[in-house]
Length: 222
Image 1 (cartoon, rainbow, N blue to C red):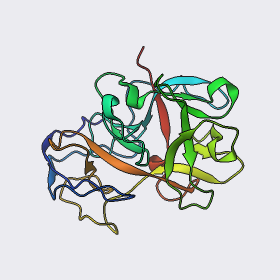
Image 2: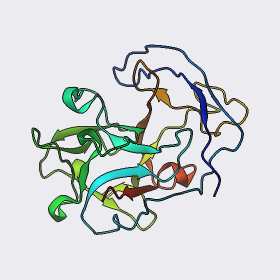
Image 3: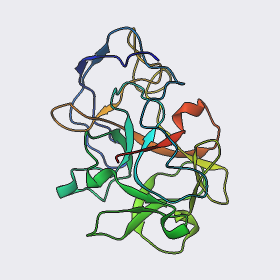
């Protein structure tokens, strides 16, 4: 397995997306030796499997430009979450902070429930049309809140052919790719210090594009 690249500078624009505010225009450079689409590392994916219940962090199998990986995340710090914004893939924290811990298939319901005790919120697709963002909404019996973990390691909206993808920011999007970078581009700045990165989540046809951009695994914090 290749050694993850060392970040020399990590300064990128925060995304506008749905109501996000652009705060800076920056450049990220990496030494040669990018992580490839097939690279995965510990923790292993065994805790999250089709039909199972799992509580913890969920990480994209591909690291892209983030040596710590990208985890499903509620925007904002745990003490000041920004529920008005869509869910994102964000730099995995060093510790399992509350904004990245979810209960997948909670109670066998198919819901992905946020575990922060002050709320009762679940992953909610805006629509089942392949162009939907994902938000947190009040947990209820809704087809827009029912997901399954497929044998292909995708998070699929039940009853549809739509899966949760991470956005591409490289060629054909808003950013060029620098020499040595992952061809899926740079993440966007998640904070003013430019120490964390994030990417939008997209509900797109399962198997669309590079499969490594929609494969998820459990992050075993135990």
